[in-house]
Image (cartoon, rainbow, N blue to C red; front, side):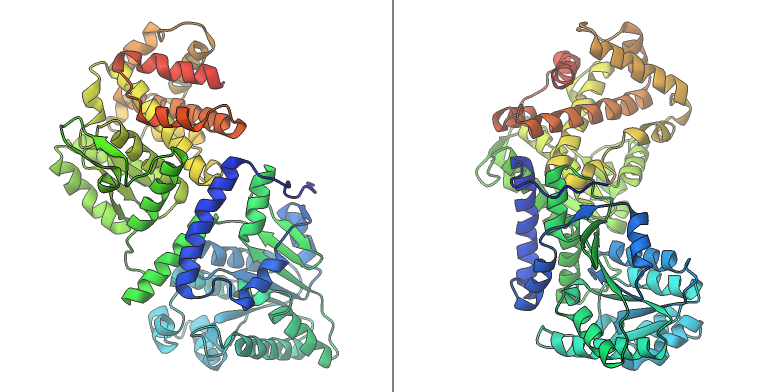
Length: 555
């Protein structure tokens, strides 16, 4: 068990990542009016520090000693509701009967909720009858998962909330109403354990939990309670600064825990999207423009390179110049990305096989940058993946290669592989510079290389698992040697097999990215050299030598 808390000072790397996330948080929370509101500051005092980090099983053992468990919800992130559904399933394994209380349905709508849970009302009818879009408005999928889990487990669900939801003047009234209802339900059935899903800000010590405790005492009931919060940024940055994993819970005090499943960038971008939908009266299932979010990540990367996008002049190989900010890529996401990928790539003369390969990359990695059209395609908003393709854009723009195929700069296919590996390395580095969770949550793709090997265009050409291991091991032996030229057998194979080139470039690039990130962390890679890595052209004849030199130096 780790009992470490945050160090007194954090590295410049973590400090810069935190500033980027804080900037987005302030923008979003200023827009919704909650920034620095006294009601919300009280929660921040509760999550100022953590006591220890433990396993989930240890947290679960503690939770089963309580009769009343609150789980905080950040309404805009489906991961928060998925966590509540998962906790409900784990608690249901106990012999103690279980019930669920939810905020997102008004208490007056209990009969409609009962009919939905019994299957009498389908979701479309239920949502229309409770005015879900007008009264709640957050993405339905996460909350549906909670109700579905309760129905599957035969756990009764009780609605807890009351108006007014608009603004923050009514939060105290809502807390009092929910406390009265929870205390009444517990008093009716003291032997039952209750899981209460409520907005995180309501779970400060002096808010809902305190009000419920006070009312239960009037009934002569003293049931132990616990609070499970999610993704508290203060604690998140303490973990990251201390080098501790973010996939394990922390104990805050005797009654409170915190889990982590969403990083700060992803958390507040999700809320920004909700606010955009509300402002435009857009349905929660409709597409939302991720361009501002991705451009923000590119600006964060520019900050690392000490580049001002509005003052950096780009000189394109095609013969014109413009400010970097005017060259920022178009961004398409979700169904729109899938629909537009083919026509956009066809406009730039891409072959069907190349388009198929691009689709596979988008499907497997969730993000794709196409230099010929200067376009970013995203399946959804994942900060690390988006920052990775943003780094590829910066590399392309700073070297004057926008709207030109990267393959046009090298006749030797083997050298093209090393150019792609270099680009992959910078993508991995960019992802980690922006989002500390990238190495944990999907950007570390080495383990995914082999499953992807057979999925590239030319399926029959793809190297089998053992052969892929052979070529990767051969290259690692080359890296450890003093040779300056790759082994001839490898060069021949690279010239013949496009799938091998892609897979090996991915594997080498990820190792390079991790090595460069470690150098940034320990201070051996400074800003000036970092900027050169992005802006310096990579001549085809020296691509292999440059990549291997960086691997050897950092390794």
